[in-house]
Length: 279
Image (cartoon, helix red, strand yellow):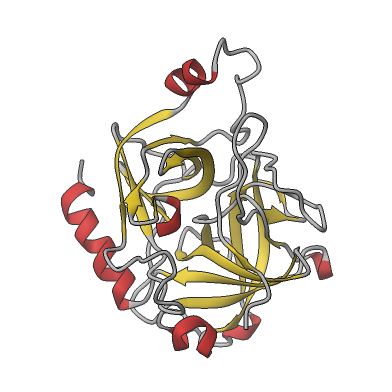
């Protein structure tokens, strides 16, 4: 049984807080992943909340389903930004609304996986979704690439492989507070399991390490759901941060990141790209 179920959406300052996931004991991204951004959104009249996402085409940002829909409804409004410091310019702005309108990118719509039910079918979560930008954005490091079917199953020596997670949120505090730092960080994690009852026997989420500070490792905590899990130091996006199994409220335990190499995810992404991918 999960001791603490952590899903994303945490905000800072005048933003309303909720529970989530963010990079702990990692390093500043320092411009390495301009294709990774943060999103601010309102769900069911409540917010703002925040998540992370990754550009996979000029207008399509891949993220978690719970970052784009909750309680059966898609976000009321969603903004996207790619700066390393997501709060840049806020202190000088005349109002929150003017800052969002001038410093953030508008979005056309958001789309959760059609079978997403707020974890209602756990462990088959279908926790994957997209944000459709109003205008195209081309990051300097290119768009994230996606793996072939069953990439993680077929990865040789996968228990020794190192992956990189990227996101905006709380860093270096155990136990964490429910407030983001809102700076883009990266951290190293290891793949622990592809198959288990807790992750839908591999058809939903893969289990990754979350031991911040241990042997130089990193992890996710409050503020980073929907962010990418990259294979090694590549642009290959193999999963998005979904939920965590933590102990005593601390961000130490295991992460379960929704795989992009399972058929449910591949079909969903292909359908979205067929409609929005070339715009």
